[in-house]
Length: 364
Image (cartoon, rainbow, N blue to C red):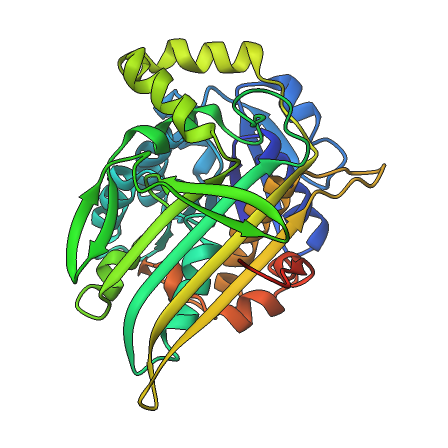
């Protein structure tokens, strides 16, 4: 399968290696950064320096490809999806942006090719898990989805290191958050809904952020009483972000905040991803709860060290592409994450990264 992979950042490089090494994909990696592309060399892929914000140049690259895998910043998702439609390519991306997803859904109407956004960790895998658990209930009460990509060794006041895109991070902290409350679809405020919990003896906080639910609100509306998604951080992070975005009004100058974070907050490869889903409802006349809880750790091998967020995000989109190639997903139109069967995902050669993770023994 011929694939144009847009973006050669940390996630793009991991996607390139996974797909390139599999032997089933001919991958052309496209980026404006020659140095980033050089890091993809030797991974069985073709590299091409292209200005990814130049619509005509990007369109030229897509001609003759069968699929587009978009690992560019979220604000380029709509453009990339339009170009995929024009080129007759299937389309997959990692966006968490709600507006972009709704536009891609519109683009996919009547298309002869498939469009599957939100193929990462959250949205992505978290929605697959939640929908799988929900299907086993006769009636649903509460679906709670919690995900965190955290430094294993936090040292600063925010108790955070950059583990993925700063653009995506600030975007999810600033936009309204879809949820279902008492059966009604609502927009909750970001950074609100603070709660605390412990996992394996470590204390965490969780709060509303945008985009993690994917399309689950539409899928489960009328079927569930409460449905929400919250991002997990170490205690104290939310208050400091609220101070920066609200009190200092940096929500209105996000580029300044992003610049400060890039200059002052080191990236880390030593991270951990938490996945924590609880679903409650009625089964055979009894009120029951099902829980899915995992920790995925960074791979510190000398040859190709990978952060936990690289592993989980790349595994999500590569598994989606692989299941699609195998005919296990619809072959045209808009594809929701919850259309992926969890057992098929975990059995997939890429999705098995989640299967190999450590199941959390206790939650308090």
